[in-house]
Length: 255
Image (tube, rainbow, N blue to C red):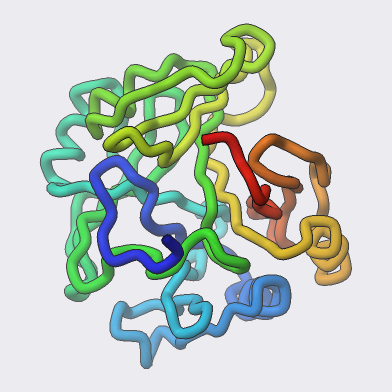
């Protein structure tokens, strides 16, 4: 189902981009995904949001200082942000931005897991999160890459886990809510130079053509395109260096 009106706790539900060049980011993602942007002044939630066919799918925030990192943040749904923030602290994470209300849209905080991967927590108000998913230009998957085990997110959000890799050469766990795969955890080696982070995947009609367009628009193709059981994937960076991925969804992915 592509249209969303509710997200169960622990499910990725929203993403937004912090960038030093909002105007160029709107040009880049608008041409790549066909996004249409509101303005911060006329959007009811106080910052530019991107829409596909009238459905809100992502947000955009201007970096406010030279030290503020550029990048995408994945928000996980919560029934109670304040309670979730305390559980994050109790299980070895840190709170970067304390729980706060967002103009009636909902309540949020920003946190780090024990490996340092940054993520957000979203308690829906008027904005449930992304209103459309799994269609071109919208979110289709989210995963965290880190060297730590899978105990943190189940303890904080109550998700279940299932290993779908071999646990050695490909250590990949999926998070399950009500038996449904909602996100993934790629466990990296202890000696890996890759930072712990959440990666957000956006669906496209043609992965190869979209990757070529990224380069034409001033971004970079960092990995791929390559095939997976779930679809054809490329890992990319936008002109400001924010990492994201695209996926041409497989017609018959694994159940």
